[in-house]
Length: 44
Image (tube, rainbow, N blue to C red; front, side):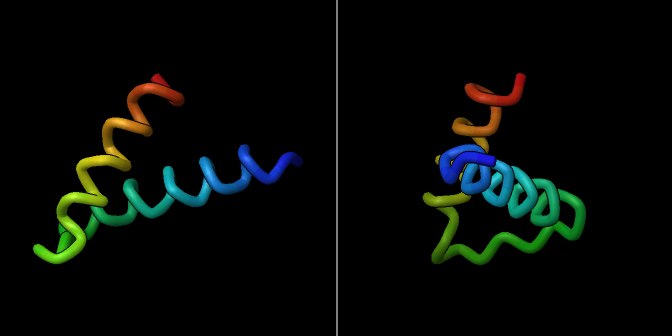
């Protein structure tokens, strides 16, 4: 397993968990949006 894939997988899990429990602090909102775009670009 490459490091890039592992980081992508962790980021994907974080976004999915955030969506599931609807916990998105305002401070990390910008990063959250970035991760959603990243998820769409690389996983869908």
